[in-house]
Length: 481
Ligand code: ADP
Image 1: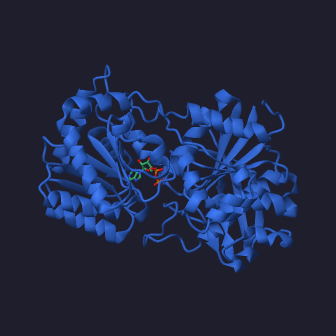
Image 2 (image 1 turned 45 degrees about the vertical axis):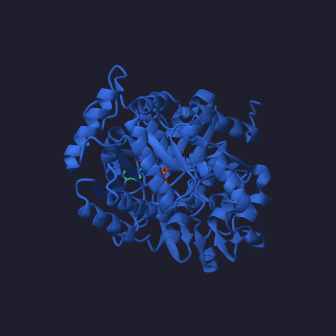
């Protein structure tokens, strides 16, 4: 078995802020069937999950982070069957906070750089000084991107220099850009390689990983194409490193996301009776929020961010409701305050047609996937998107902008596809897409046929886990190919 260590700041159920948490929590479960033993290492946060678990300390140590002496412990989760070994790095003062990324004021932690550098340095210390060996290191997003540089250019970690590194871009928008003075926080490295850290004149953790990792992938083929064609300042770098890049579509954990067993739902899918399942949850949700019935229910779940097109959605909802379109909406999300306020204002104006829940709520999200007729994703860009996959698994028709992973997973019904696709996140297109939902919903035969089609699609990790295992094999010594 090849041993791979996934290095990440999120992993469901330990800590999740978005899709990366789902991916890191699920992919390792599906890899052993392809001869890969995947482990995960995370920072030890102060959340409920960590507080309830028992950990055994494997290594204690310390290192310098600039002037600060950092004490850390590497721990392993005991007596728990996540399906893979789970390690964490305990760094008191840095990660023992409730939220993964956000301070109570809703902004990112001001010491984000220190936290990320400390996390990655502690792992390098452990791997280079401890007994534990991994055949490959798999880093996720910019928060762990500097690891690919540290193992290559820090003399203290020479032992790791030949270990293949794999880097997955879950979201290329976030880059981990640091002032050059932050270099003083890094473990000692050969300064003639500081150019590897640079992109656009600053230290760029994402770009560093694209340069240093042995392999780089995005979480869908279409997103890699977009990055390499005409995305932004990252495009020339992606083009330069093209030979080692690929796009691997995310899967879903179809056990965890199973309408027949989902522990968050008060009624399960039985004997494939989708009509009973959907109408139970829809009625439940309409009642809970006092929404009008006998009309399609359109949901949105996600970060209230420009990326997700939540601002455009608000405008399209307002237009649709102003025009008395017979449709109800349920929106779950949080993020940008201006978008949150706009959606809350609309919910107050149209209380019987729009419910807005400004929160992060895993249980409610499952209820929404189960209850809605349609799930809308007007993303401006979408590295993969998992919501459309969960929605199909729960019998909900996805309505998406044709970008990134949404292109790969939701072709329009007019070309024999799985949902409603519209060109881009603009109010007119989103409004038209909502009108198409209403029309499709009226055509019961077509609507039910589409639902029957999407509920049997297999977007589980089985296929993509094989692609990852093939990728690992190419670089690991006991090559299977
Ligand atoms: P992201 O870009 O945020 O990672 P993805 O589509 O890849 O987007 O994954 C989003 C994941 O986060 C899904 O599991 C979705 O259900 C979940 N999610 C997003 N917002 C919320 C929320 N407010 N409450 C509960 N779950 C949420």
